[in-house]
Length: 82
Image (cartoon, rainbow, N blue to C red; front, side, top):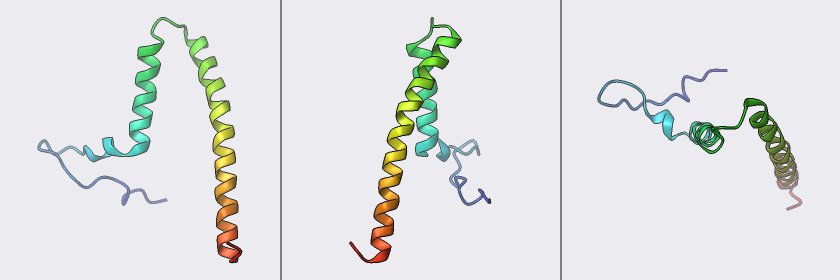
């Protein structure tokens, strides 16, 4: 898998790449890390992991149902029934 076409091409004044900070997945990852460290600063590591596991279980079900619906919609669209 070639990721070179996914890398940002715009350079800032210092010559470093900064466009990647605007990519949705990067912004979401940064916001999750900030939320963990700012909203739960005095909670021990095991409790944080437990909360994250529970939330990922719920989000996983939502993503699964959404993905299945999208796949079904694509199949119906390609078959001409929609």
